[in-house]
Length: 199
Image 1 (cartoon, one colour):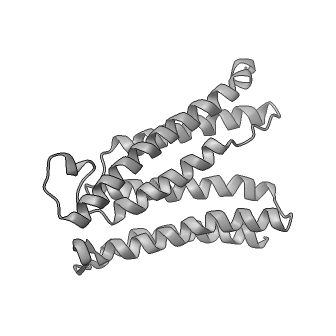
Image 2 (image 1 turned 90 degrees about the horizontal axis):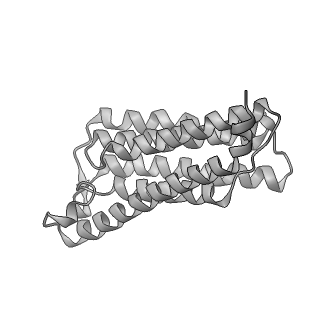
């Protein structure tokens, strides 16, 4: 297994550590009332997110792109993002419809990819997919340091720091949902010939 694939595997291996942190019931908070527990989870998430850039960069730089890497990398991304979103739903920061849209998009795209593979066709990833991933990671990072719920700034009085974080997080989540729907729609449109020809 080459180095980029090992880095991708490391991204998957970091996911359980995000899930374990809440089990320690760390009650300490820092400036703005941000739970230390959330900062630890955020740190793990950011490290895992950075590996998404690193594995691809190394694979292209050293010309060691493999079929296994092409298969594993998007799976690692989906696992990381969906895990983080579900954790945020559990903590009451975001509504369930956000990860539902994300999961629905990934199921549709994965299904089309399987159809394309069966027809011997490769559908190139678009820039919209990368924008979707980056927007999700920014929104999730902001959500982990928000102590109030999605769009709470509309009807709640928040301290200045949390007001700013909540506004940014809420807007970033909307942007990520739009990017998720847009990139998924774009992928389906580009794949229409494969879908129509499939038997």
